[in-house]
Image (cartoon, rainbow, N blue to C red):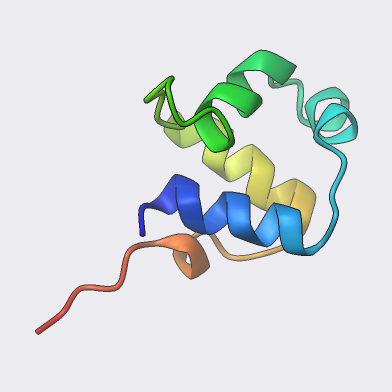
Length: 70
């Protein structure tokens, strides 16, 4: 799973309101939606967006990285 997929799964699992996240992080709602939930968009999160989201969620960004198979 991609970083965006992992993050989207976490957000859904915690029932986090995307509009609230948008307001509190300053990231436009449609940017969040397109990066995390719109499968047709293909938009990846920007590094600053990931940091702001993780600060909002109070989690480590590394928790959402793809696991590398050895």
